Length: 227
Image (cartoon, rainbow, N blue to C red):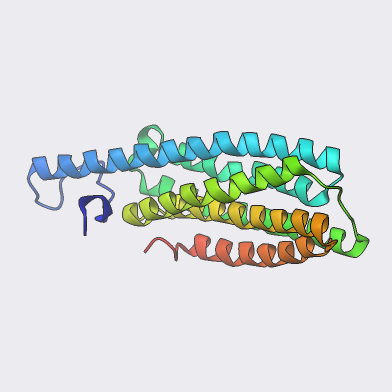
């Protein structure tokens, strides 16, 4: 196991109850602070990308009349909340607070529950109404970019979150992976609609993603992914 993969333990704010030399305690605190700074940086990068993704998706949705793209854009706002929560959790005195970690973990889990009904509702409406969106090369390009970028951020956050035993960071990473799944579904729907006329594919996959969001939200609430 490399040094970068070794688990980190949240250092205590007061006292040295472990009987360890002060240099060891200080080293642990510095290692935690470096990891926290990295988690905060990754959250900021996600937030910036989500702002761009949401803006472009909404513009593309209006131009193409695509319910799926509109849902994808508004979903970016919800997913951005998890990044804001992680930035909050690793800022100032909260960086070393177990209470802040517990609160952030629960808050990130709630964003999954906000995401699921919205995706499920939009997918159901599109499926029942038989909405057929026009071709959107802007939406296709955005979806391809998100399929590439989001897994990179998501995997990095999950590994860091497991190492720090931070359910909030792991949960944010899962949100990024959910974004990649949704982008892939939107991409498949746009391409299938354009090339094959399969307008129903996108909402069907969207319903599956909504169910997955509920499952991941339950696990994030319980902290099952960070141990």
